[in-house]
Amino acid sequence: MILWGLVLFPGEPCNLLNECQSPLFSVFANTLFSLRCLIVYPWTQRYFGSFGNLYNAAAIASNPKVAAHGKVVLGGLEKALKNMDDIKQAYADLSVLHSETLQVDPDNFKLLADCLTIVVASQLGKDFTPEVHAAFAKFLAVVVAALRKQYH
Image (tube, rainbow, N blue to C red; front, side, top):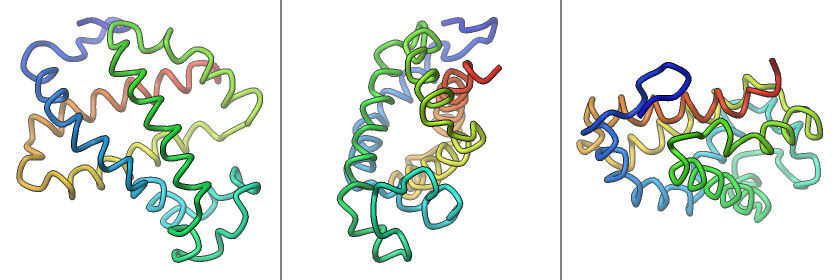
């Protein structure tokens, strides 16, 4: 598979990514990545003013709007997995939304990807092999690049 001249998921790494899809989605169901991002990088909270109380870890963890946002992000990643041949095109509208309407700092996409990687690694444990990590990192790098496309 080729994206932007980059070999993305040839052969086995693509299969490894698909194998970790189920644990990935269970992580999203628990929204641990969103919690981690909002707690570890508190300045990201400024984009979620309508979410109400985000003043401490307990408030963030019990906030239903944070959980709902996690499900929205899950839907976006499912879309990427279903459109691996052209994630950039599949994310065109999301890129416009985040850059022009929401005016999200594009560096936050990388922070969320880092938090997601940490949570997935902790959930998969020894099954988060170097090969799975590499495939997952490539996938998230392409997702982040697709979200940042409109910013250029």
